[in-house]
Amino acid sequence: MALRDVKPTRSELIDIKRKIKLSERGYNILKMKRDGLILEFFKVLKEAKDTRGEMLRKYQHAQEMIALANTVEGTIGVKAAAFSVKENPEITLKSKNIMGVVVPQIEATKVRKNLLERGYGVLGSKSVIDETAEAYEELVEAILESAEIETTMKRLLDEIDHTKRRVNALEFKVIPELKEAAAFIKMRLDEMEREELFRLKRIKAKAMVKAEAEAAAEAEAAV
Image (tube, rainbow, N blue to C red; front, side, top):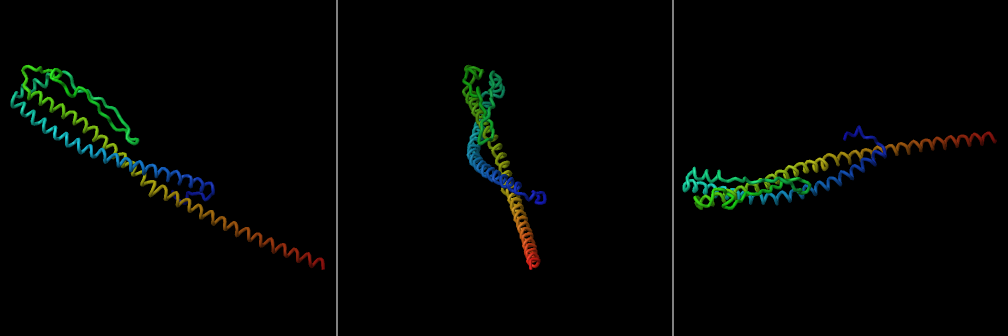
């Protein structure tokens, strides 16, 4: 706010003081929101580390099982079992709110299947196929969980950054400029009040001199 654009009036001073109160209230609210978001972020970050580690563990296990299945059943046998599955997992994307931040909530069905739902039949397949299928089903669940948490973490981080910029703008720019403008108006009003008081004193002094002169003139006329 350029001081040259500020009108040194009492109404302007009242308006600026109102803006200062609103800005300080907004600053306190945003600061609390920022601190709350940071706490939520660290909670989600811990979950993200745990789920990421679990996902990597399940990925390694699934890779080991598919390698074993290829050795026991052969590549053709594994592909035949994979193509036998008739129902694919169904994913539903919903949303939830964390301190005003909309984050995804992933719900999945038909990820885990029993022997009949896998389609390749009990007869003609060995247990290694079942164990491999189960390993990959667990991996898919871990991937979905990790995707939800990673996306939540990113959106919280974006909101923290956005809120932090607003807090800094209020703290280091908006509020100081408003206070500077208020101080400038008060200073100008005080100057104007002193000038007016001085002017009134001069008028009063001139009036007294004039009155005294007139009284003296009247006295001389009377004599």
